[in-house]
Image (cartoon, rainbow, N blue to C red; front, side, top):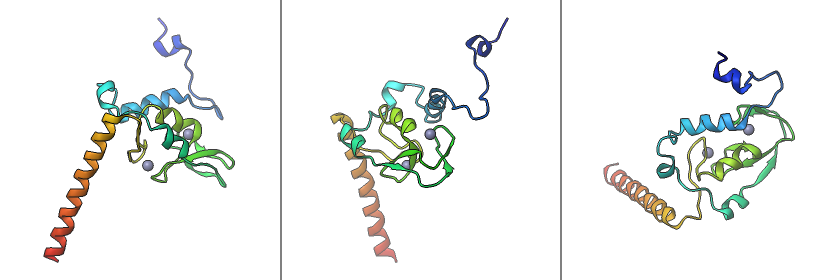
Length: 143
Ligand SMILES: [Zn+2]
Ligand SMILES: [Zn+2]
């Protein structure tokens, strides 16, 4: 009996062939551990406003790898630069950001259109701020 991959007609990538974005997307999802309980754990997508404000840049030179499709950037490719300064191909990052609101590389979160989630996110940021305030206070007292 033919195995699953053979049945699906899947072949290893030929030289110069574009990888299947959905496969890499699935790999990312797995790395994020969001296959389990997808609906509860995955934060909502980036807000339309933020998505539109993410600059598109045209790459001036080759080099560096897009961490989503794992291909190297070529001169003239268009890429999105997230607020955390990470770069991804347009075609790679857009499907990601319409699913969830964080950078696939450093997980820095961006604003969403989801009110409940925003309340939760702001509370989380405040908690972080408090932590660093306490640390600063501690440092100023003990240094
Ligand atoms: Zn890419
Ligand atoms: Zn990032």
